[in-house]
Length: 373
Ligand SMILES: Cc1cc2nc3c(=O)[nH]c(=O)nc-3n(C[C@H](O)[C@H](O)[C@H](O)COP(=O)(O)OP(=O)(O)OC[C@H]3O[C@@H](n4cnc5c(N)ncnc54)[C@H](O)[C@@H]3O)c2cc1C
Image (tube, rainbow, N blue to C red; front, side):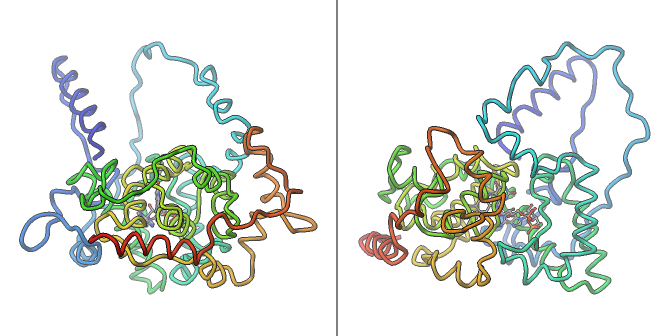
């Protein structure tokens, strides 16, 4: 669905055809081909809820069993040795730490789906918003890498729905958010790097990747606990809770008036569940420039959000070492993982806010009021 991967697939098919081999492709990465989901008047959905209503009752073919035999070629073409690429070294110090959080491979993905179905799914609707809770499936990385298909997740979700599991419908809805992102990407590929609503092109976001604000945001040093906890979680684990993603993206694009493309690129760098469609949609949703976006005047308050969604301080204690007598390993791993050049220490006092929730809201609203969006 990504324009470059469609071009690649077309080139592979053409090359095979020249050799007399017919190649077919299947929608394993999606539940529905984008051109099969349309509004009543034709055209694609630009708003999520009507799309959900349109696809919720659709038949999704059951996943096929694994092939019993896959015939290998007599000789594989020459290839690089992956270890020679030293990918871990490129990550500097964090590689081994992130690896401890990754759940790699199809077997582990299926095991996680089963564990989630028998456990967290029941309370998913309420718990999915609590960042200190292990309340979500954590399957995004496996879905992004094709280690599990959305159809496998959908069928398990449907079976649970029929069984009356109260979390099942919300889980199916989230899978359709992923689908929505891919359908948008298919129909409007510019969502990847341009404001989906062109009116936002005039918005004076900073694009300076060396600015003090952007640097503090990346390094989890903004002085706002929700932002810093989430950015440190990202650096250590390669993932971030969905509520954290919404809050850090809103803070960057609204309070810090920094372009969503900078945040999008940092997420691409750090996320192990990086997915071009969901990442671009998520950023443009938070910034206000995307389809079905948060209204531009909705400025999340990171201070009240952390009190609401982390009332017992579990998330903050997990990721922010400063001020704790005996910080947990998670909070300390951030210092072991982050580049030496960041020069961070858990003994340094926690920073003062670079832009408080109140100041940032006023800055963002004053820009919005001066322009018609
Ligand atoms: C700024 C921003 C950037 C994001 N970047 C990514 C990204 O690069 N990759 C990515 O997979 N998701 C992204 N998301 C969406 C969402 O945060 C993650 O999918 C979710 O946190 C993954 O955790 P989980 O697997 O435990 O999800 P669960 O809550 O268990 O949901 C099940 C699955 O549904 C899908 N899903 C859930 N929420 C969303 C959503 N809001 N949008 C699209 N699909 C969703 C995912 O495939 C997820 O694995 C982003 C959201 C925002 C606000």
